[in-house]
Image 1 (tube, rainbow, N blue to C red):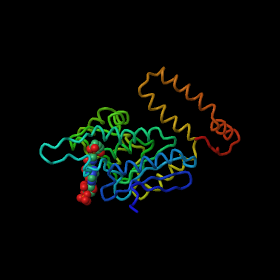
Image 2: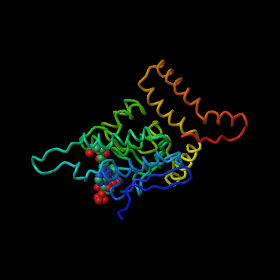
Image 3: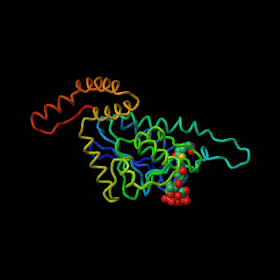
Image 4: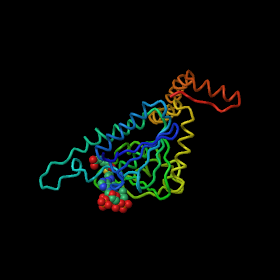
Amino acid sequence: MPEPLVLTSDAGAVRTLSLNRPAALNSFTTEMHGELMAALDLAAGDPEVRCLVLTGAGRAFCAGQDLADPSVAPDPAPGAAPKDLGHVISAYYAPLVARLRSIPVPVVAAVNGVAAGAGANIALCCDLVVAGRSASFIQAFTRIGLVPDTGGTWLLPRLVGSARALGMAMLGDKLPAEETARIGLIWQCVDDAALPETAAALASKLAGMPTRALVATRQAMAAAQDMDLDAALAEEARIQREMGNANDYREGVEAFRAKRAPVFKDR
Ligand code: T3D
């Protein structure tokens, strides 16, 4: 049996998915895309899973596209036809971003080492990003003549403003995790040794929270970026009406009034 390219482990209601091609810094092949999507679909459909952690096996989080993949890398033969990278993005990376942004549970990225190219933007697509101090983020695209993909053009200016987004994307420099936390690109930078327990604690906390409200918060904040204030206020009213009809709201208020811990169950 070949080694799985995505490892799955459960601890209570938290499922951890680890990208598992450490010799190539967990860079993406089509097979790894397939295994990751299947694992995300399984988690989305499993009512016992209330939070996901995405991380990498070995010393890296993910180095983006596997540049040794012959179906993607340019053929050095003179006159060889160029590969259709648009297809690679539309068939693999765009659906992965859409899945991560719509999955019905919160997602924590535990960035354990370098996150480059699509690997960086996959981490940044997650709801909370926590990184070990030795980790780094590289918008590696321009280094090889490409533009940011995997949601980078949308995410980066929203996370850190267009001046920093353009600097990161055009220069392609390695940003240490500590600096990314300082500029608000990620949620938190912790000592390497503390990363697993920090990510687990964050995920466990999120797993005990009202899942539906967390996911609606992700969606509402993303949608509001393209709205004026009046539209955002109207959207908040629409979503809050939905939340008000859910069991978790009743449970949250009852628990508050009874001075006990709430037990949220909606998903
Ligand atoms: O289809 C398309 O191309 C469109 C989609 C694009 C999406 C993208 O993600 S484009 C960006 C692709 N990624 C990169 O350009 C990053 C390439 N990697 C690096 O720049 C460096 O490896 C790192 C900065 C990430 C880490 O550097 P370092 O010094 O810590 O490690 P290393 O020695 O460079 O790499 C270790 C091994 O991993 C090495 O293999 P070896 O020599 O030990 O057998 C290296 O070749 C391999 N590796 C690292 N990144 C990739 C990779 N192999 C294939 N693809 C990679 N992306």
